[in-house]
Amino acid sequence: MTIFEAYNHTKQTLEKAGIEDVVFEAKQIIRHVTGLTNAQILTRYTNPLTPYQQNMLTAILRQREIRYPLQYIFGEWSFCGNDFEVGPGVLCPRPDTEVLVEHALRFLKGREQPAVLDLCAGSGCIGISIAKAVPDAQVTLVEKFEVTKRYLDRNIRRNGVQNATAVLGDVLEQAAAEDRYDLIVSNPPYIPEGEMATVSPETKFEPEAALLGGQDGLDFFRVIIDRYTQSLKPDGMLAFEVGFGESGAVQALLENAGFGDIGTTKDYNGVERVVFAKK
Image (cartoon, rainbow, N blue to C red):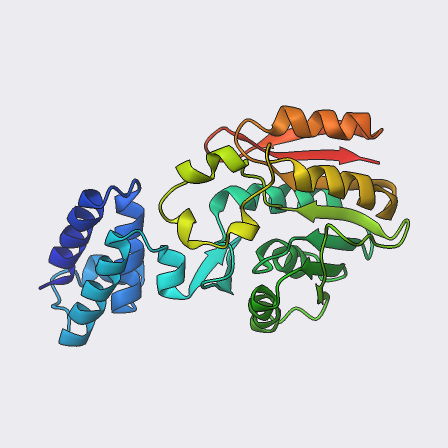
């Protein structure tokens, strides 16, 4: 089987499994199996796969056929141009979340030695990406579960960020000191209880605690706004990733808490994915 034949076979298998973006995934899988870049694949597409590569491809496709997340299969994933170790027990980094980081970086531009707090940090993709992009920032990442924090600790080391600190803690039970942070970011659990049964097949392999946001999906937003507003410096910003259709409700929570300059940012699919506000 040549690389070109393997690519077509991969696309066909993914299509039969009901996977949406088969072209993107097929390219990722072939890159992973061959160890080649996209440019190298184009010039070597007639090269045959080795027996080992064919076995690896078969194993990957069998896992994707049951909709096991590709991020877990690879054991790592790129986010904002940085690589993160991922696996069972941690939420998979998603492109939609990159718009939260992009907005955070726009806010921090020009601020000297900003203090940043990343709540429900998971793999650390948000806070670590901010720490790498803003070397003089001091970023604190809070994660509740020890198994998840192990990924977080490894990703801090992997990305070589000296200005990021991981903390084991429950966001719902603690609050930070007053007037400490220029920016608080969070991608909290936000799926309503009634929608958990309808999430994508891949999501069902991810930890429920990182997804379920209570009956209406807003539990974490309420607590963070209530307990962490005091942790923001004057003119500091609070920025959330929110679920589909939740931006209006989260904006209302912020308005009721006295925040100003409330706004939203759309993800790459045109969904209002980020809600932000200033103290």
